[in-house]
Image (cartoon, rainbow, N blue to C red):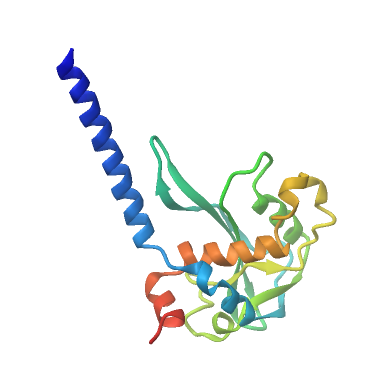
Length: 196
């Protein structure tokens, strides 16, 4: 009886160590997005983007941010990508959500808003708008905020979710933090924000 008790403690200890190592790996590989979020926001401006009606692609994806006992923690990074003829670049409305909602994901409502439109007034980081590194189909210019018709889709959010509804200030700030922390590559983050 005593041997099985020791084995159990060793097993639990090993699992705890492995979880700690897994989370340490995720922690060490992420950027300090919270520190530079306001700078990113301050270096952004509104611009009008045009695209042919219904001419976009939708892709649901996620980024793993940590590990738990029998699951992983992740953020949803759903993308609605389109080509703008004026800028001759691809843009991507990036809907980033950390936790799951009781209702459908926000990207479904954002896609519904974009579906019938031919233009949006988007807030774009100036560096990303002007950099040749951004704008290809593989690396579109990210759009984390635009003139989303929240009033038309108000019923899609309950009172607690409304504060973090797409395009609200709290959502935008958190989306920028998550984008910088988990989506932007470590190399680019270092080059843009942590240069000495």
